[in-house]
Amino acid sequence: MGLIAGMGAWCAWSGEGEHDRRGFVKITPMTSPIEVCWRGKEDYATSFDAMRAYTDTRGPNGPDQLWIVQHPPVYTLGLAGDPAHLLVANTGIPLVKVDRGGQITFHGPGQVVIYLLVDLRRRKLGVREMVRLIEQAVIDTLGAYNLDVERRAGAPGIYVSQGDGTVAHAGAKIAALGLKIRNGCSYHGVSLNVAMDLRPFEWINPCGYAGLQTVDMATLGVAPRWDEVAARLAQQLGHHLEQHPATTDVAPKADQETASSANAAA
Image (cartoon, helix red, strand yellow):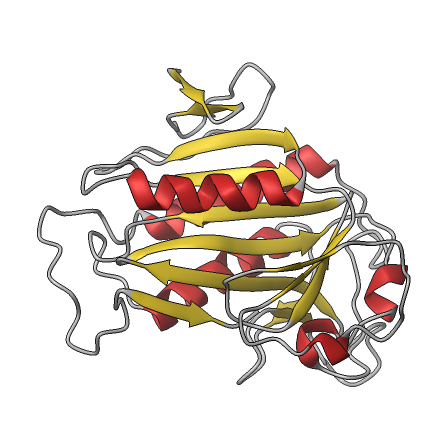
């Protein structure tokens, strides 16, 4: 495995069935390998500045990357977000205004965050396709732990399936996503709750929805290691992205979903 230095992280080309030096499964290489960068525990502002800088300087041949990170407690508010969705003053948790779509969400220890720095034009992906791709990767990841989850029309993210109405925590949100598309390239990404302090979600309207319950894998009775879930989700994201191999033809789609600047809600 080749390591790529930079940005305070270490990155790796992927490979099916192999494991890296930390024991994580690597992603299958196909026509356009993706760099997987483990950034460790990192302040949100550091990640935010770095992914914008990478997007601005990557150029037409810059590799697509998945950044895996865990943040100290922080609230982030989307570009058009309403600060009124923060319900409790003086929580002690910083609030950061960001340039993704969507309203307010919480990041904290025990949550897997993966930022997707992907050239959508090169992969012929529209914004809606990208959102569904990310959602499917989360569904497949949680399915490996026998957790029944689903999409919700008009509300991007992943939720515990309603089932027959007797399922514990039915309808609770377990994963959120938000993207910024600039010059045809995405940044920001997806967060999946593994085993975390969920109380800060009670102090907001998660993603702008009053009364929305938020849950993690541990509450649903599954307790895998954080790094195991992170590796599995990165593998699924890589797998779905590679169904759209990168090309040198970067003409925008007719629906202009990959316009110079766009947002996808969390």
